[in-house]
Amino acid sequence: MADLTPTGYLAIYALLGGILPALFWLWFWVQEDKLHPEPRGRILFAFWGGMLAVPFVYPLEKFVAGHFGMTGTTLVLWALIEEVAKYGAAWATALRTKAYDEPIDALEYLITAALGFAALENALFILNPLIDGDAAGSLVAGNLRFIGASLLHVVSSGVLGYFIGREFYRSFGWKVAGRIVGLALAVGLHALFNVFIIYENGSKTFLVFACVWVAALGILLLFERIKKITAKE
Image (tube, rainbow, N blue to C red):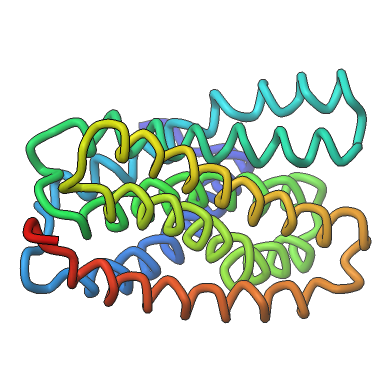
């Protein structure tokens, strides 16, 4: 096997820096479904599906930015594109299969796909400073993505997963309504995060991250709530 080039080593480092923290968060969140855990193969499939969504998302976001500039419209459309992509990854890999057999599964698979998406996205954020020779900047980017952006993806997709799961036993119309409401809330939260991070030039980064952590605790409460949903309800 030919020796890797310096760029190849940097790419591997960045990929590991993106994937390993995401796998930690994945391990944390799958603990919420201990009674009927999902097949590991299906979880990994959803995770890879989220990663594969990234190459499709970035060209669309570049097109939007080129058309609208760095405006509020762009930030909302970016959030919409990413939330739809993560939902699409979860649907394609799990939600349309027999593996989706109880309400809590919607949360599990949406969050799994979100973490896969965050893994590759984070790797790209780590790689760019490394290519420019900025190792410190790469380390900072990786840490900030771990404690902030990754959880933002979990929160936004978790909200959508909750609204999908709560309609698990209801009619088709309710299922569609749940997806619409959940997606709207996910996009709103994601867009709000974008606004504060980009428009405030990072001045409120840690305040925003603190809010994301509080929201993540809220997702834990949604897990407990959705566990109580039964066919009788």
